[in-house]
Image (tube, rainbow, N blue to C red; front, side):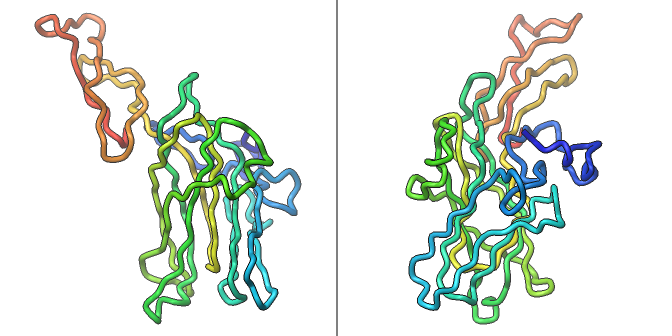
Amino acid sequence: DADSSCLPGGTFGSLHPTYPPNMRPLMDSRSYESLLPPQSNPVWTRVDNDTSNSAGASTEWSQNVSLQCTGNVSVCGFDVGPQDNWLITQHINTTVDGTPLNHVVVYLDFKLNDCLKAVGCIQTFSINKYDTANLNPTQGINIDLYQFIARISANGESTSGTIEAEQYEDVDLSSGGLYLAVRDQSSCLVINRLLVFYYVCPENVTGSIRLPLTIAPPMGQTLDPLQGECVENAVPVGGTPPLIECQSGG
């Protein structure tokens, strides 16, 4: 469902990312020209859940309309009182060849304001999931259905008042689909890219052994040895099929 303008050959095709052979993308923010209103046909939604701002001020997630196909969305409300801003993706199908994945990897490329670093603190945000196979936009924006995944901060040197960082999170799943939400609670945050993917061990020939395409396990784990097969004009040593490991990074 990517926008043709973002793909190679489209208006912004030169910005479209390429993926290594061990990665299978399920959703990439850089594949869409329109992520949020007021652009037409946005694929993401936002929920402004502020309830305790005595000053009456509020901010919400927005997209830089001059940066199509870059995934650039932002929110900045640290200086206007308590905020609770939810950025929610479209439903992401995590069923592959009829089998639900039991985990995916969420990658974030982001920038955070370092306004609190001088006093020994740093801003954070969280990512959350609603694990469901049902494509239901009404339920998708019900923040009470979401489960916390991780709280994220940026560690590094600041440039022009911001700290740029990347984050990978391995997310367990059970249903064959999900909605993802980035929750801002009074930060100053730019999301440059949000990518959901899974790793595979690609079909590969090593020496005289052919390894079939295999979905990789969660981070830090290794699958039980996979049974490969000998290439043409080769036979198993001692009649036993060759075994090869598939690790978490593919």
